Length: 356
Image 1 (cartoon, rainbow, N blue to C red):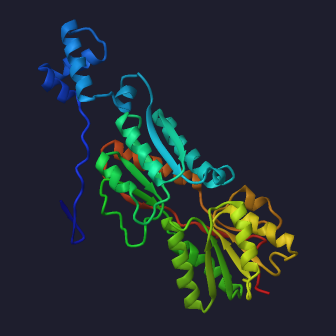
Image 2 (image 1 turned 135 degrees about the vertical axis):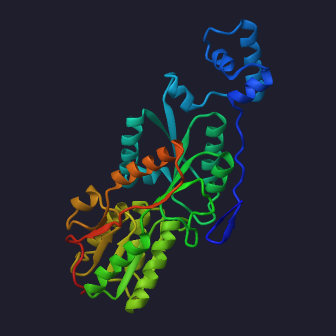
Image 3 (image 1 turned 120 degrees about the horizontal axis):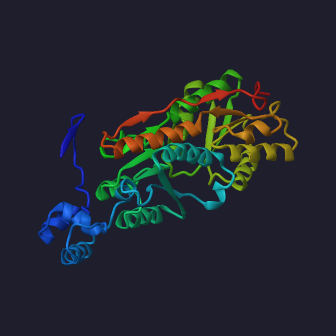
């Protein structure tokens, strides 16, 4: 138990995997003899080698990926699981850029990336348990923090080093899991900046086509939009989706059909925004003369439309690099840190203009 900011933090004792020291004590030999026996090296008798292997099997010992890497027997590995609809990942550039940055750092350290897409959080947690039991990964990168997220407690229990990428739920400062690092950008300030921009253009009705409702960053963006709009006397409403172009188009049609349609729409990713732009064209609504559009994450999609989309810009590849660097800092014995990344900045393009 430890105190942090006046509060008592109780950390679970990680489930312990058997070590070479355990085998040596059980077999009644030295740790070096165990190493020789398990790695097929000369220096121990065949009887000792057989006894050590029997003990190792009984204790459930398996060589770690890090040990294999140090001995030249194979690469160490970092894990990444995405519990997202697979259909939404093929066209969303954020994760491709994030993984690109992660891979740059892994290649320098000669680590591999074990990547898996699953249907839900239960399946993601099952993957962590399986990877831990099989010694498949030395650490994991965790994306899409959620309210009441089961993953940090599980990773604490397993003792599996992890970096959570993204804003934690409101009220969670990360101290409840002091062994898990966190890399985040301030979604609330970024959304407030978008509202400032649209307010300066005279928009009084704003719609927000958001992502998955259970994600912590979706909740932060919705709360920030509501607070910023209330301060300025702006009418604003958020509508959650699954990030797909289909849902983006359907939701855009619904908000445009309302009794008082918005004069500006903020979309939580580039795919949603491009889908919304397509609906405006389908209905003959000129952008930006009659409707302004803002995309959360910039991409080649945002820059290739006509008009090009005003978007929040950040270096997502660098974001991925920093996440991987934080994980290696943990693996190298450093403390778990909570690191704020650079605030995304709004780049104004042709999709926003003065309110009609």
